[in-house]
Image (cartoon, rainbow, N blue to C red):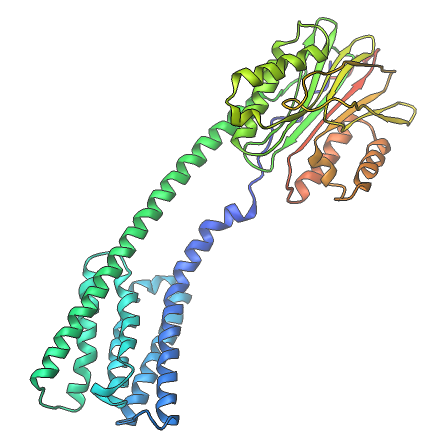
Length: 439
């Protein structure tokens, strides 16, 4: 019996894909620390500038430095919140402290003439950006506290103009809080919508990947015993454009390795079509006729944007007497490993499916122990990105041409690193008198 394949393709999930949700959660945890760091920095700079610059006024130094110290205390407390996520529910205490801190800073740097009143926008936006309409009211209360702190520290009789100015500022800041809250709400809604769309797309892609993997052969029990076959496909995404296939024919078996330009669902759809048409052409005769039918099927069955893609393909009909008839449709990555240690590339000048219009069947006679090894261009990437990779790959294959070892070693290489292209391998050994014990 022939050897079985290594199984269906295995999708490789890249590290960024797995890390993205963690990165979002980490960013959400550290945002309060960033916010408070800005507020603390503004407070320190305001106090230092008020002391050093002669055109700025310090009317109450203890109050000014108390406000700065309170902002720094808020920074330390925010660091504690980040270090201990369980304390996150106390986050609003920090901007509440900031409103008082800015009130102290304002009182110490000129009160109504202080140029630093605008700093109150920082905690206001911090709170207003949180979900919930109450987070429009809280900044209003905090802003009022900023104005009331100087009144408690230095009671003065408010004139009509001061009252009007206070009311006007509160109205303006409330409007700012309302706009900020609404923009944050709309942004959150868009994010939720995008997350839903992503989950839906991931579910559809997972289903497509399941369908594609089910198309790959999982056993070679129906292949003549004269052939030992192994294959593996490692797509860089859950749905890839590489595929391999085999199926019995009237005088032996047919084997295919294809590589569709591109990645993702579109490439996977074309790969499925190419495989299906080649399989349905088992009775048409020569491999070139099967490839021609496939090209015609793509032209008729797919929309114009899809047919702009092309597929490189190696399609082999192998009879039990060792006669190999094959078509190389722009692939060029198939090695014939002779049992005597020599090797030959099975190549032609024919163009890929989707580009060429005609193909020619080539014929090669296999001898006992010969191995046909076909790979996708992602395999060459495992041996470097220079032209010498072709020679290194050939040396690698000649060193141990056993199909089991070839596929296992190439699979190990493919799984060891992050590949930019699909890694697909198909290996067939011809044994005219197979051992009875082979399973």
